[in-house]
Image (cartoon, rainbow, N blue to C red):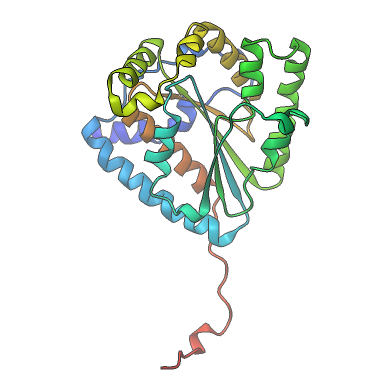
Length: 279
């Protein structure tokens, strides 16, 4: 009976972790240490099965070449974006996956609208693209650091929604993940980067400064997620304190979303059964 219960919960991840498309949204109600419905030992086998299915779905997506997939990853510093990409998407065919990491815009990018540099990185049909940070930085950092007037930031929410609707109307399936960690977990991960020599390169003193703005960033995320979770571009709040559970949740939501596309292999050329390959 317990096994059936776990299976049922696993199939409800989309509904459980999706941000509502309307109404009030409170990030504090989402536990970053949400108790998993599986054990860590079970997770290894489950993730392998999810990855095997994702490989199949990616192959059909590539062959059919009617749809594309855009995965947006956002998180606080040390939230686990790189690890999620590596652990969940690592086994996929690299020919069909592209990862784009967005840093602070350069001079040329700043001379255009804030979505200019983003549009060029969106996926063509058959492809899966991952945004490691994204256009949402322009309503997150800009809000916290007051890099733009409030009126401009409010306009950007509308521009983002219109932009994502355009992509969706053009055949791109958008899945947005906010990797939710606690402030205590971030502290442990930052200390780990300081104490483990092989991880020192990951540490930046700027992370300590940003950490002082934890509550400001949480509020900015809450507003952004509330204003931009739509049926054509849903946000999911992923409990990310447990990395192994984070991977399972992301993999399952991605797998279920790809299955929902109902992609099919193209019809083969007629007369293949009559072809004989010469020796």
